Image 1 (spheres, helix red, strand yellow):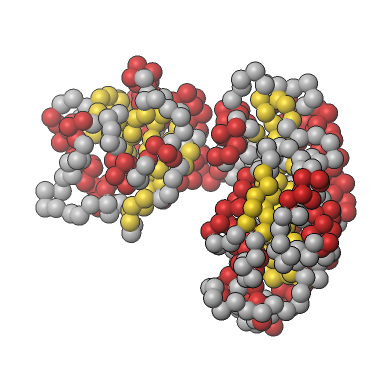
Image 2: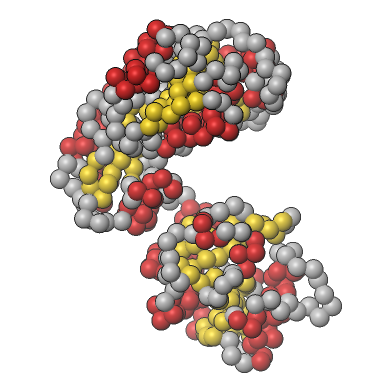
Length: 534
């Protein structure tokens, strides 16, 4: 292949169109089995009459192509009902489909030439969003190019696709990446480029934790597994000053669902405190569980008045419950812990707290609380994938009216191994708990928080929370002067710094978050502050 012989053009001749149909067949029938075979060995797209095709030609041979179409409904509309609810704000999207490149041309400049010419057409056609259905076989490549996933995976069997989008104005990033790949650099080495994470999870793990998760798995019924699980349970209980806990394969949401079903076992009304996304999610889980409840809700980023909580608790009958988030990650607020526990006990109410983002990042004392939740990642610095439920009573009666997987009493009866468990994830958690000096970790995170707040006080960003009610592990930044948090996050990722900005609740408010759960160095923070200054 001689690169100088390649040309990119809009297909406009009968011969080019015929070659498109045959390349389409080889790719989407023979290679990716999306359509059934036929004796003609040609595949005419159902939107062919409305498609505009970009092709790469080597002499007279079409060696690469894709189709562009900006008329609705898109092909994705049929695969993903209510498509618009998944898309970011846009006025004139275009769908790019049928990307096909002959195998011997895939390591060269063909993809870059196609993208380059497609993006050139965006301004003249008014396109402000490019939508694709990326084969799941190449998601790492598309992500690296700058495409953002949205919505669920579509397709079936061996033809699965992830809907993705990219803004035409990100053309520089996409083309620069493609230029790197076209120089025949090893793609794996590009994808292993160092990324600095300021996300609230997953956090960067230590070499020992990485080694623990990398060994061959072993049976969850073995004595070795039970010993390791007990070690992990002792470690988290000591850290939280709690008497008992169960560790489940699953997420923090699963752990909270388990707690919800315990709070609802007596069918007594309760109270949920909401001042952010995760308090709102607790209220949603209570509603899904069919539990009678009230909600005390205040503005996001605001601190609860103890008097307001006290007045709300006075309306809950004896035997009821109160549930809240200790560290509200969506804003960086710390909600009271010991004070609410004391008020609940004085009123003979069951107390439950979501400590998922608090445990391991700040000192947490669960003494006297009935139920609490945590996870193996975040502040505990293990791998994500394990939910933790703390419980004050050593034994809890089973609930035979709910699924056994969600029954805390069943897990207690089974000594923490009710069903298949992951030896690798439990080993990683036990290793992290054993090697962490959490008192020192709390000091480091608090010190980094103080330094960062001072460094950003005259910056382009306002910090949402301040004072003793602000958690040092997460800073929520509000761009000043109409700046866009999403675009800032994208630009930082291009520099290798990953912040939290993609969640819907952050996008809706134009917020950007820096998590210090990874305890970054001051040198790294200084570089981040410098980048934010741009």
